[in-house]
Length: 148
Image 1 (spheres, rainbow, N blue to C red):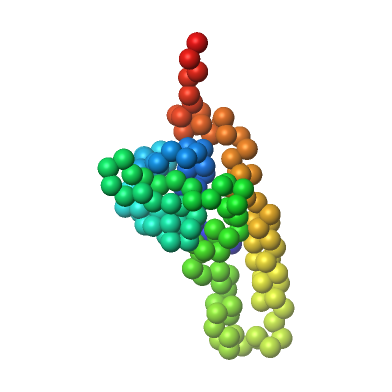
Image 2: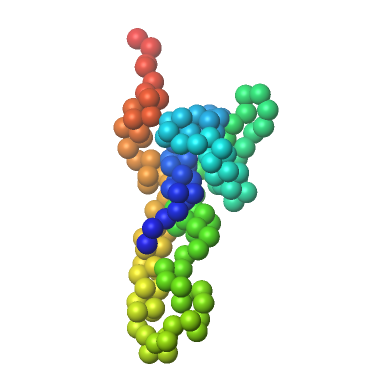
């Protein structure tokens, strides 16, 4: 199974926003951090806002931040929301197109594999992905210097 770029970018955006905490973060900052298109990231942010994973604040000083605590953002739910087509093979969405459909055991095997994949992601929250927060802060260039 291969996830779309949209889902990949959504997950990366959530990780970055999780590291940033409650700070309002411009979508352009997320784009710059990952070297991605700002326009594409704005679409991802809008999609995540519609789903209730991200909160957007418009205007000067606005930006985006997580709408929920990281422990309440389930990665399986994010993937299901951002993936528009989970059909591994055409017969998942177009019954009757395959000559051997009635006797085929491949389709149920692939459906079981997809269910197992999603089941693993259902057991992961954004909080789990943020466990190495100090490392992520450093990788993002967000390491804070403490006053002496």
